[in-house]
Length: 284
Length: 325
Image (cartoon, rainbow over all chains, first blue to last red):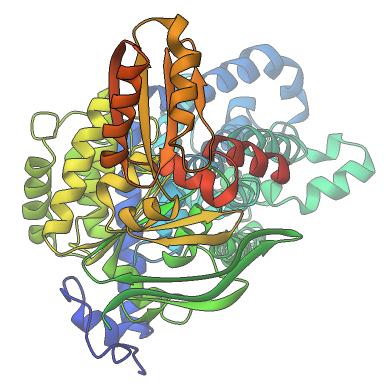
């Protein structure tokens, strides 16, 4: 590699963190190693935030409680007539996905906050992997979403939800939810790096998440909606992942929903994710 | 020629707003360069270009021999940046903040731990090291921010308005820290709006206004450019001030005399303060004017700014704010 140290006839001193670094920058192994390590570092930072400031978990903890109770006991009597199975069994996967969509929406709000506070300037002046700034937040919210899924399933079981789809599919449920949320977090990240303002990021993500989660099979069977809305709800990725989760828990065809869920997730991670990272790199 | 920074014809514009206009700058290795100018003069833009955060619209710059655009990734291992807003994490402890910065510089874990302890001691943060930053004072946050930017022992450090918003005591503390850095051979580029700060810390000062370099030199050279020394006389009785002023006027370089009645003070600009002072005293004595205080004053950098731009630093700041709006 053509290095510039000859400009004034001397090398920068001390070559502290780095002599091998100079040769390595650009090599796949080097880049990959530091993307992982730097992402892990920033994930740790975020998880420390949750630990030191547990109020951040309030909506994650009480959100599913509220929705499960509200929909089971208030709306459940009426809606339950249109579902083929017990309404709590029908409802749980929907609440799981909806609540965790809101959990990972914190990704973008947090990123916007980092930018407002000048954190991102510090990060960008460091030799760290650039994608790690977004990656750390995405991974951290995904970890929270995973534990939140287990918590939500626990509450649901207490108030009468039962698994009928077999052991392994049931066990895979929180992982499937976390994987989808990992993908969805990149959408929030894209919003965060684009608007760079916590207020705006929070209202945009809210207005993305509300229609996506409600105009789907989250709370009611989409067959009860008018035709034009059914068309939208049918292709909505949330419908795919909710149906997949429901069938994992209650039995029914899996592959037909697993494939679109997987494809959407891949699109979110690689398509939206690259766009978010690209926008982040272009910040000035 | 041993330059840590070489800037050649750097310009940066945002649409029609020109933030930097053909700036040239050389910084000697191991020296402190003070970048002095009012708010909005382009100081931060230049720092952002030199720390690889921003690409210049045209021109080129090298830091430590690395081109800031082409070799940005290599350069980042060797520079530290402490920005205007202390980029420390409120919910982490002081030690954790330094640790995180060190790990993101890709230093080995054990080395970071050792270095963090060293820095906490050096910056007088040992007692607070394991408390969360939320409870830190403004001065402590700045010191921590600076410590984090020094974790990798960078040979070049950028301080963007390091003491803005600090109380006088914290400012003095931070000045000491910066002086220590320099004694260890680190090259420092610091921006400031405080003329006194540049005077105190910088070996060389670059005055920048509306994106252009308008003067460059040591503090003494710049003061020399402003021209002259001042003789200030404070009279005991305010009744005497007009008479004192008319005496002084005869000695003034430009036959002008400033009068501040409230402070009972009158001053003139002269070439050779000490010898003229003697004559001033004699004349005042002859006129029977009682003097409360007299002084020969070196020009401040405020005087310099006034001499260079025809306006005070404060006026210039207001002006560039208006231009941006």
